[in-house]
Length: 109
Image (cartoon, rainbow, N blue to C red; front, side, top):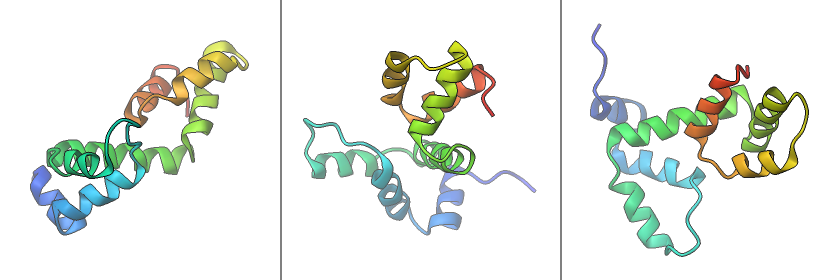
């Protein structure tokens, strides 16, 4: 069986791009200086591939690590053999895909 295109996968799993965009915008953090309507419009105009990548990253985070804070703590412990509050605070602000990449680099399971 061939791999589904992003459009096919979006329609199969979520029904429409609008529904996927709504689910993704629910867990993304809106920049303070941006209005809610502009933020939702920006998310709704992202490509299906990017929306699916963000959705998959969020699902991986929830299943494997629970929360951003828990993952940031595990990465910090793996990198420094203990806690480093400044580093943990810094990486807590990173996006989910970047945190998952850091976890992969430091061998966090």
